Length: 226
Picture 1: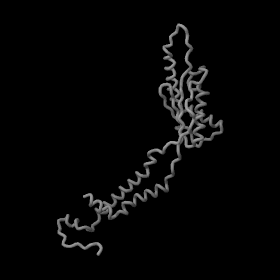
Picture 2 (picture 1 turned 135 degrees about the vertical axis):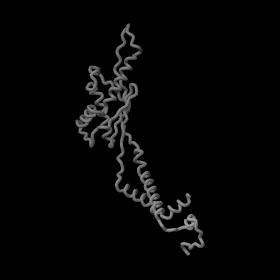
Picture 3 (picture 1 turned 90 degrees about the vertical axis):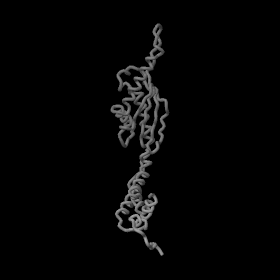
Picture 4 (picture 1 turned 180 degrees about the horizontal axis):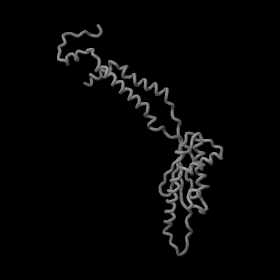
């Protein structure tokens, strides 16, 4: 059975390859390579200055200092990259004559673990990615009181950058890397389906086994080439 399908496909091999060739040509003409994305990853230690130790007062090994730090970390992680924070970062960049080709929405995101907050800046230009990251750091250091009233009068920023600002290119998404092979595979399957359909609709008897399957005996066979 498999040998029969192989002969059918080989007989019209050009039709098997035709849809894949068309897909390849259209993809090459219409697809433009995606611009590389650069990511700056910044880790921040977050915490409020510890309360001074006082005689006759037990502070539970500064347990409440750590607990407050986790609250502050979570609070800043929830606002970074959204709404007012992103707008303020954009204003800082505008004041520094940095013109961005697109809004910052979606370019800045964050996550946190305990008292450590990680901020990611994703941008297609490495120089601008560095500038955006620096504006994020400056906003956190200089305008932290604008976001949480609990921080008014703290006297110092609750965040401290622990990593250098370095833009790193990221690999192309899996979808981009597998897009053309998947299209080619679909094209080959479509071509094979066309060949099988053609064979099913073809009224011509081409092989003796087709006659034998109908219960008839073959007396002689004329070869294709003498």
